[in-house]
Length: 458
Length: 177
Image 1: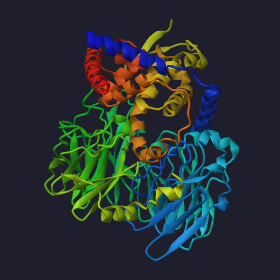
Image 2 (image 1 turned 30 degrees about the vertical axis):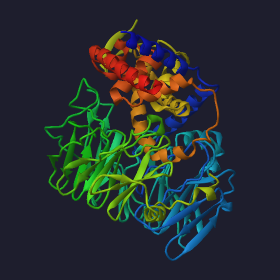
Image 3 (image 1 turned 135 degrees about the horizontal axis):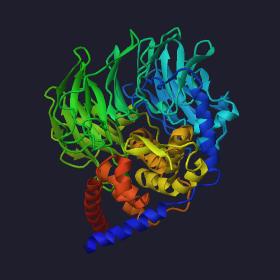
Image 4 (image 1 turned 90 degrees about the horizontal axis):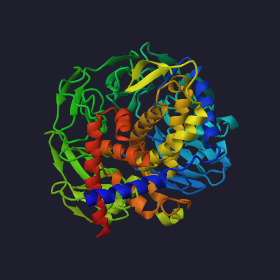
């Protein structure tokens, strides 16, 4: 078929263009990474990543400097960033914080998150592998405006390769202690009140450093699946470390962490390994796989693997879905250890971002501007009826639309923020889209905590 | 030749006194295919390099095991494709930042516009077909090799390729209009 022949030839040309030789020193970098990894393995406990507080928890080191403030959903904080200062404004106070203490060049704030009463600013410079180690830094700003550097300045030079892999840094609060994890390093704890620092006897592997969805409760940090840290910084390791899982999703019930993932190292091939970790006992139990479980990967063992797209708590149950029509979607009740089946989304929602609103769960299929206009779609799950509804229109016709990261309900509308700063607004009752009103834009700005781009030099 | 003593995820494990090739040889041999697959699936060369780097660190860490495999390159592709799939999830969190840096990305030689459009279209395919197309056209793997890497029947690989070509031809035609 001529069409096939043409596309085949084009595909071969396109593929050949991507096959490039390794860059200089690339293999040396691999050897260095392997030495760092070997060093980690000498420790007795290589466990999963630590908890992270804040919605959309992953802290991913970006590729080049640019101010980005991610406000803390659910609060009224307005965060403002520039290359050298940050201003945190609440309804009653405004704190402007210069970052001279960090002594970094080209530093930018890449994320603001809220941990208790603190604002935790993550700052970095150029790409980690090209940057001096102190260019990756984290500082806590207290409500008083006091800054407490908690990470970055004291890194020895030979930690630089580890930082190459420091895509995820998790942190959580246990009492006055801020607990941080960097893949490839031991957990660190910093007492934000006294400045005391401790190294905890828990190492985080490179792989599990990507597990960003651990959970925390009161004064206990649950490190995925196997370890917990209490408010006195006691490390309690469960006997059953279990397998390291990939593609993890986890939700926190209030007392337990429900984790879903795939054990790729099982002898029989990828195995879906749902489990529940109970913080009070430090023990984990395996969840029974429902009879109607349907995996999607690999196809040779459809009963085993599965590429889950989103998980969230709906009341007392954990919703887990692969996002595929006719695929697997279910609710797990940790109290009864039982599943019940839920309809699948009516359209594929791979690479979806699930946003839990008051009365519905909105699942937005993320898209990039490279995907072309109209690629993003959304569905909503009515929490009461557990029925899905598809929005009739694509989210944006803008060729410059970016990934959809967050949403919030204002009155009868859902305002959905795109990563390029544009807003998409849908009437939640009719599913029709309209341009954001002035009020919606204003409300969103308060919610998102974004400062006008002009002030950031964008 | 060593004796095949076990099968791990469809890849024969051959125990040898010495690996069949050095890690450096494997790296040089497999890098172009691995970076092409990672680049195709992630959409970015830098992301692709990181994914390949992590894959090769894992290979080196387990070199005693990986080096003894009959097809260590297949193992690397298997691990890489899994890493690419995890990467999509992490990318969601990162995307907010990435979108802001467009127009600020350092310029470097890249693929042609035709190739960029093609691989962009590929990334709209479902994950399995996307992986099959990337492994075939970017990784230059045969249908049999892809079947081994992705642990699926060779016939399914072929039908995925046929279907994907048809979809991609349609997408490319639309873009040409």
